[in-house]
Length: 79
Figure 1 (tube, rainbow, N blue to C red):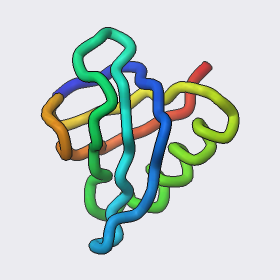
Figure 2 (cartoon, rainbow, N blue to C red):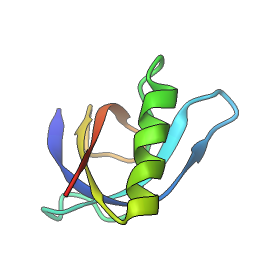
Figure 3 (cartoon, helix red, strand yellow):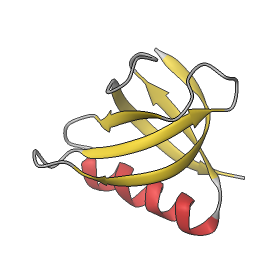
């Protein structure tokens, strides 16, 4: 499990209904990689991502792994 602050530049919905986020870790762990919302948290994570993009803020994310397309189980607006 990885926890940390991220910049976000794009977000959307996949055909299966999961939110897809383009994230960059502030600590350099990953650089502009796509991650997917955990099933059942799609709307909440997408709403938070869009709020962060529109207000130019970062998000605190809890991600299952640092490899692309891992699951985001929590996404909180910060700064």
